[in-house]
Image (spheres, rainbow, N blue to C red):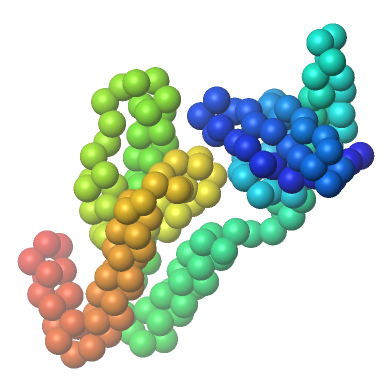
Length: 196
């Protein structure tokens, strides 16, 4: 097995190149040879692989393992820690348990919308407006958005999309914290009594 680094990656086409042996070896990488399930390569990933030479003398990577792919990405860890802290706050401080269910439901809906949008992008179909994706994040689906960016590699590099996404995350967290204040608690109770 040889160690190297992904130096080029086209996620929509599922291929790229690995540099190994201090840049002396450039190896073609195809997604079908990656062993790390649920994790797609990206530029600067460290990988371990075997090399085959095809009939034209080109080097192709096989049995590719992304090193460190067993670790939880920071955005996913952020989401998990937040959900645990939010759940703890709701139960200890007497917040609305409905918020936890809403976070989970909205995250699932948002993840599905990202998946649909990625599929549409790959097939040249009608796309979900970015404002819709941001609104879903603002309404509590941001954990699903972060998971989708990480797993689906969709909207994960585009600016200013990423900056706006993080703005919606912090506004949502701020609004959640506000619900524990006297004015926030009254507002939530009024909304719940009017809707339920």
